[in-house]
Image (cartoon, rainbow, N blue to C red):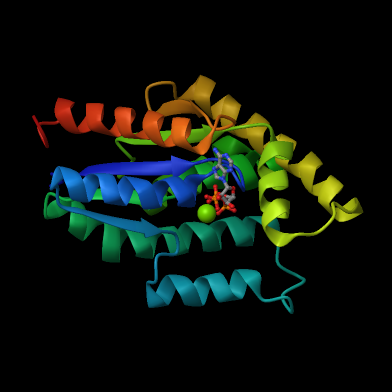
Length: 215
Ligand SMILES: Nc1ncnc2c1ncn2[C@@H]1O[C@H](COP(=O)(O)OP(=O)(O)OP(=O)(O)O)[C@@H](O)[C@H]1O
Ligand SMILES: [Mg+2]
């Protein structure tokens, strides 16, 4: 039986998920609560082997549904080996990406259908939905610019195609926000890093209070 709290960060590339997760780790330490941070595939050997199959450039014949099934399989193993045990021990689990990434990227942006992708993921997650998904929402150009800034390179034609794809990803996430308003908190990730961190802290602190993890 689940006793912990399952918190997931969602959003497009460069939206600040990993950076903010690092700050939330410090915050949770200060609060003195028991937690783990993880990300899919989460260092679980089986999930990493599955991911290698997905990413192997020789696998040009990979069908979209096969890919979606493999992601769901990797998710299942990470959930069973890492997330569920921590939740059962009463820990807070902070996870970088989960099922809504598959719905936004593969279901919507790649056109497999969000309901179809949800269907296979329901089998994989068997009811273990996050207590909250924090959606780091921003214009895709802003996220890609942040990543580019880090790489010190100019935007090229491929990057522009990227923007198009990422516009769809954002649209997918916003559709999910409409469909699952109770499960998703939209955070404006275009603001300064400090503002975004503060907002994430307030949301998480509130959730911890409501669930009696802190006073
Ligand atoms: N609010 C912000 N303002 C300005 N820069 C930011 C902000 N948030 C993050 N960054 C910077 O943007 C870059 C990308 O951030 P980060 O890696 O945390 O994004 P991400 O959401 O984890 O992306 P991915 O999905 O690719 O893993 C980093 O260089 C980070 O320092
Ligand atoms: Mg990241």
